[in-house]
Image (cartoon, rainbow, N blue to C red; front, side, top):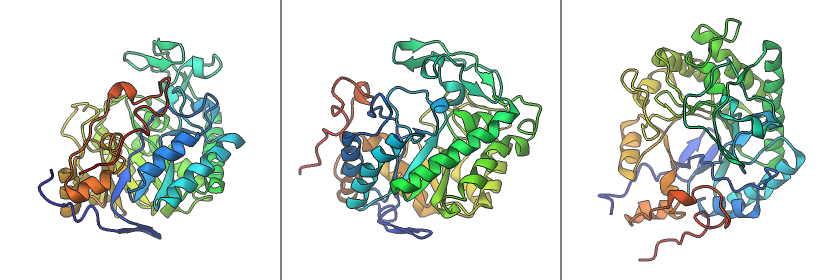
Length: 366
């Protein structure tokens, strides 16, 4: 039982021109239930509709191109079939009374050649992940040294994001989120640990931010800026990240993002995915000083921490991830102080029975 009802967390929010019924977002979580062809499925529509008590749904990471793939059975948004597959998911979420943003993903060096027809994964620089390996359709494989992108290839990737945005808009999404976190391609460009380029996309924080800037400038021709969010992970170590100049880099990025008038800035400030320990963790309050728009916290928040972040003014919204897996009625549990159910991590990703550990959790019964 929670000590009190999280009143601020559950109050409505006008996210620019979008009316949200509360300040909770379903955090983007890869659940690997798409088809082999990366087309969203009926069971995915059911999953998201069940969790549409959240004011905003942020979908699982969705690849913007075949080159961006790097996870088994994750969805895409780069083919006609993907676009058509997402439409009933969006309709189910809207029918359940929530709003939905599609998260755009390019795995970068976190991918593996087995996803890419034998081609090496791409990155800003030819620096491999130091880690356990990549989960592929044929089991875990060692990380490969990626191929550094040629500067001439970057405009083509920007265009992939534009085409993905056009598809997302046609599919009915309320907005999009640009995934620039967790050691995937855009985060790799942003951080000095993984970006050793000597051209106009490397070196200074300004140059390392350039790729993300160009993507935003391009996709705002499809969706208005106030329907576009950006996700950052300043404290994260996932995918072997963490740069000595992290504070300078991420405060610069937040200042630049502030000028766009975004829907929100989504900051993974919590340490639930690990911490690089290169200094003090960055807090939402630091981002609040340089970012005027809606600010969303994420990673490891329980209901009391979420309420405290809203009460303090550090956050406008909180994205909740893992607690939402086993609690499709999470908002009602928060509102009534009901206990939360636990999920089995072995069922987080797709298995033989795709609904098991995905859509088979009951609502609370007093």
